[in-house]
Length: 223
Length: 223
DNA sequence: CCATGTGAAAGCGTTCACAGCG
DNA sequence: CGCTGTGAACGCTTTCACATGG
Image (cartoon, rainbow over the protein chains, first blue to last red):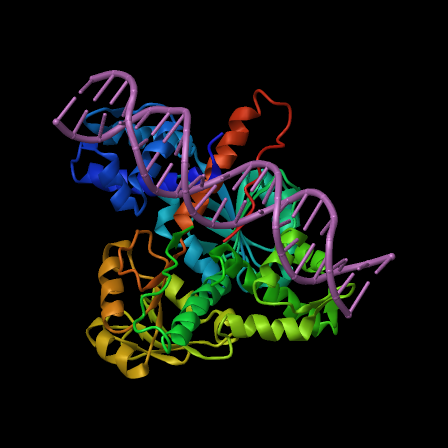
């Protein structure tokens, strides 16, 4: 079991390594991997040490070997079947997002309440009405879902997805979801992100009257 | 100066309070606020204690009073001028997102490289070419920006925004941005979120062979 | 000699437990 | 009596510093 903080950084390392491999780079030291991933070098070494010893002292890490191991750890050699609920602007953006299929995440089913959208195809998926959710999710063997619905229905949608067999959810609706503990849940909340930025912006505006320049607390966070 | 972890939760509390006020609820105990925000009650009390003493012992918090104070802390009484760069599916979703204008965030300028899009209006903003970025950002007094461009150009776009006077960035492109420390940066990375879910999904699939049921480590995180 | 891998230390964030106040 | 506000304990994360090995 890897620490959660480590899990969140593995995709970044993987991205850096993939770029390096494309540039024919065969080895990389923790120092370089760290600076390209925006973290501390000791952090990189500790994170990678959880996976075993895949580096060579005096040299660095073999980019190809490490890339392979990170992919395996993240389960990227298998394919994940993903459902998308809510085909507003955000839902459409999600289904067309390149980063998904690229890494083994396949949106195989989409759902919306709007009868005008039902029956259309978005990406590789057909749009179904909400009534068919349980049936289609079970039939397609979907295990992950993206919730891009209005906040008011997100909890209900989440519960129906979980009942139908989904075990991982990525929720974009601005509500806190209550789900059984065996379900993995991650939240992407644009309003929260903006308000956090607003706080620091507001802080700078206030302290600028007292302090000389704008050298304030930069909230750099990758999550 | 509030701890960053606390700042990230304030918008959640604010949302719960806003809902409660709409339901005519005048006071709320830390216990209820906590459960509705999906956190621990002691956490709520500690977070709120950083802002001062706005609760009444034996009763709870005055929803209206607390809401007002949280809004002030987050700088939501002032208006923020926001620029949007990149008008793909995601960019369009962002400009049409309701949660923004609602809380004082106004997208007053948009930019894209596609000549076919330049000159159009999206929401309340006119679409400009990239060449006009510095000029328009300075003229409109933009301080915050959303980067919804391809990864390859995000670093360049970010630097140009910062040169033009932007001090807060919300980046949706899947790259680590390197910026001067006085700039606040937040990252929303869909590929990372999915891969984290993939890790736990993969883990459950692997351990299911050994352990009896799927009661695994649920990564519930609001961030 | 150089960079990894890792104990030990330092720093944060969360949770507990209860004193204190309305 | 109930709930806030808070010191103290706990656990997780990050960083340091260096022994170890190619």
